Amino acid sequence: MAFWNRRKSIDLMQGAGDGPRLKATLSWYHLIALGVGAIVGTGILTLIGVGAGLAGPAVMISFALAGLVCACAALAYAELSTMMPQAGSAYTYSYAVLGELLAWIVGWSLILEYSLVVSAVAVGWSGYAVGFLTGLGIDLPTALTVGPHVAGGVVNLPAVFIIAVVTGLLLLGTRESATLNAILVIIKVAALIAFVAIALPAFDSANFTPFMPNGFGAPFVQTGVMAAAAIIFFAFYGFDAISTAAEETKRPERDLAIGIVGSMLICTALYLVVAASAIGARPVESFAESPEPLALVLREMGQGTAAQWIAASAVIALPTVLLAFLFGQSRIFLGMARDGLLPTGLAKISGRGVPVVVTVFTAIVVAALAGIMRLDELASLANAGTLAAFTAVGICLIVLRLRDPDRPRKFKAPLFWLVGAITIIGCVVFFLSLQARTQFWFLVWNGAGLLVYFLWSARNARLAKAPQEAA
Image (cartoon, rainbow, N blue to C red; front, side, top):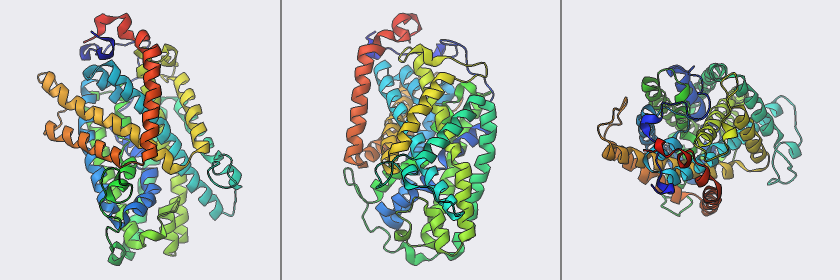
């Protein structure tokens, strides 16, 4: 078999691979909390303003479109993750279904996604933290709170700080960090429910007129509903982090599907209600440029105390997103290292069942990015990596159903043709709606990745040394 088309055997995926297995300590409720913790974060707390600026009140449609595509992707993930319960997520599925070269591209794109998501969320957290401290009368110098893209800025130190804190938590162990994550998720969801309860009574339908000031948009058009959906897409993904926990799940055949689908349903409903409440309470123009739009809406309503509480809850609970994606990123690296496509030293597991080397390495990289880059740039480029991975998962769902229809499936996505097609087409359209410079840097990133693959990874792949393990 040609090296670029080598495929992993699904039947052998239950083996230990290189090195010890991760400890199975997670149940379905841990996975729902991990998913909600990853999904509900900077997207709704910060990027709702960016999306509203692009689409106006029609950002509601943007939320619905992004949610539809992600819901279909979630169904595909649920089916594939229960069939292949290993660390690695879309990279692992692609390796088994589409071959090594495409799996490398997906894994390289996932590295981009997870790294930039962590960096983007850390920058979003910093905005709320600085606003919260300002409300307490504590003013931090601009040089230490924003990157060099802002006049007077040097480094976003709060963003670097929170990444360090979350990394330390992950190093304690998977179950310990998952339990704390569940507690923080409850705080975060309670804050959003409180926002709705306060903002909804001030609902004014006039704020929804004109409803679609920038039009619907189209591929390569960087304003309107589609452009907003391409950015707001960032607010929905995170459920894929659940699939990276497959190896650490006690009953993956049941709990993975519950975690993935359940977290998406909860978050989609919550997002639509929060977005409608924010727009109904204040005109879009008033919060479109704010780094903390929900807190700003409450301040403009005269609810200063509630705004401070929302900011405080964001400061406390946004780290759940960091935790989920740092967790996922380290497992992507782990899967690629086990397969020999990255140095096998990254696959070392500590006595607490944690991949320490790759967790610390990831934290250093994302902290450097968070310290100097803008939120919208980080989110947009992270979206590009995610869209590539989701497209691959949609293709894997269809190809595997056609190639191996009789293979046992603990969870079967309904109407797999439709689910796969919506995932693939939606992701391609969203990618074409991203900014041109985002598309350019995504291609540059993958060009660099292909050089790494052909110069090093293809020769050192596990399947190159043990071809009997191929499908």
